[in-house]
Image (tube, rainbow over the protein chains, first blue to last red):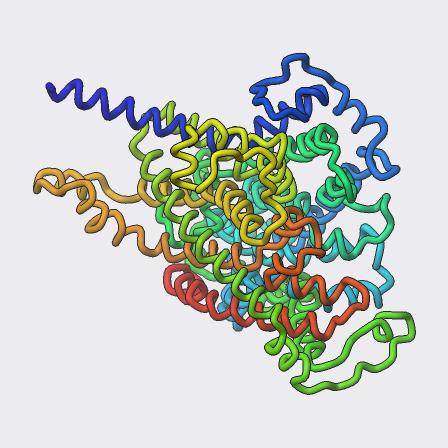
Length: 283
Length: 338
């Protein structure tokens, strides 16, 4: 075999492996979407039906109009959106302030604070759930979406600060110093100089917090009691009764919930990796 | 990325003359004293962390020494009875502790191993592929990574459905002699995967590996891109085999990446909750408990035994913090924490 054919063979072998990985990764997502558009007789069959033969909007429109467990799906989506957006708004203000402190100033306890940030991220949220449940009850926030927002802020904040501080540090300090010399106040310097330059990083961090809060399951399950206040991840459970599962409906609802996450994900993927393995990967 | 945009806006050329090296902007009248500023910026975030993470952490330990039940949850709570180490003795004497601990540890070990192995292989593959093909595969694995945990568990539950599931259909496609040889059976119709703890965990492993290998692959790829190609040139000239190249060049240089990925995966897999909750169908299947699901069940199903649940949670947290110590040390060494 001459070297050129060997090389071509190797390339096509690698490409084939790539396609297999792609199919393994995508198939379950594809199956979720395609089940959502199949009529029931194509869903409940032992045959393999690769794509909807007679595509139907039945499940999607049933989920959108009737909802589940007596509440519209829009309500659950809205609750999820309120929790996620609330978490992002409160969280990014706090994160931006703290990240500026850590990235821009040298002060006592700075190292201790950074190590604290790392350690608290390692404590499992499921473990803290028990004391948090009691705390939320005592504060009168049980069964309130506000309580869920606050808890999510707490759990997304350490990583948000950790990720954002690298973006703040990347803005040259000289810009702020120049503004200060030109007589700008501290607030104006922050608002007019630092903030616009950190904005892309703030967006990336915010999307990460958004996804975390949007996906969060166990706090919503525990801190909410009223059916109509649950978020989407919990609402998905309502499609399953003791006896059976409404597979068409649950797949339609899962698709509705997954789409915004995949869209956001493609936007921030690269920065998220650098935030998570910061320091270990150079470049 | 932020850096490029800064340079594009002319950020590289500062007009600040003499003060360039000063650490703090010059003090102006009317504002806070300069040394207060960082603490003032930090305070709100620190308060949130203290109230929502540190105080509950303390409370969790405190509760684990007390009997906390319905009477302490109701309005006008009664003080909790101090039990000393009773909760812990009860935990260690329970059969459920050993089965949950086994489930937690075996699941984490198998899943972390499989995730790291498959993720690394895919990372190496992505590095070898052409630009278009690698982008194509990355977008694909991104879909698996981005799927929310509840949706992940639900989709895999559906794929493993006894009657209409794709997995049983696939297994039935195998030639009967092969299927009998490997699995000891030929007919898979109606095989219920989600009744028995061992097969629940099998499905859980598949689902979690599916959702988490993309992150490993993309991280390994980022690491690989940072290794200078001259090293590989040299290895090739010296006639090194691919395996040797991996062992002598790639692996040692990526070791920091691998250790962070290992610890992160351990942390994620040790406390897996959402996917297990969905696949095991809630809190009814006691044999399928891991430590977090057990703690949750004790604390939140009637009658609530919150102190007992807290003791389990403390044990889980201690295991996690021991594992994490390695990660924190690694980061403190490589990052500019100081």
